[in-house]
Amino acid sequence: MDRSPRILAGLLLIGLSLSGVIGAWGWIGLVPLATGVFRFCPVYTLLGIKTCNSR
Figure 1: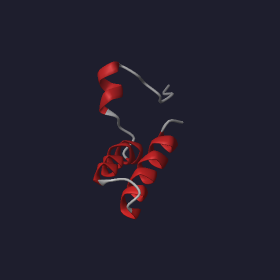
Figure 2: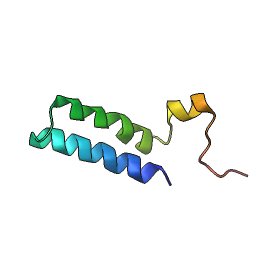
Figure 3: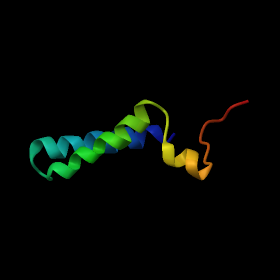
Figure 4: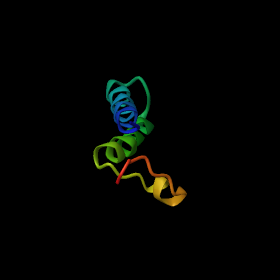
């Protein structure tokens, strides 16, 4: 459930950076994009948060 917003936020930041609306810091969008695509968030692991319903 949290993957889609992370992927969208990452794509939005990268797109804004490429179009020149925001500066180069928009490339930080690679982080949420990668965590959404690879289904792994290091911060969740550190905090002990599990968003996957496993049996």
